[in-house]
Amino acid sequence: MNVWNQIKVIRESRKIAQIQMAQDLGVSRQTMNAIEKMKYNPSLELTLKIARYFQMSVEEIFKLEEESF
Image (tube, helix red, strand yellow):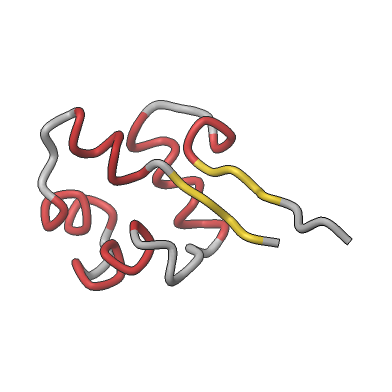
């Protein structure tokens, strides 16, 4: 299963710099970059922090794409 997210789209639409969001969430810019490029899935704790940061539900930000069998 793949996890897809809209973090970059949401962040840019709100004119928040990646480095600023990373600092606000207590992670490195490299971590935020990896999450936005979907090379790394955030922990549950960070996922909830991101949702709270944007004042959105987790489901509005993250999508689970199930693979066909």
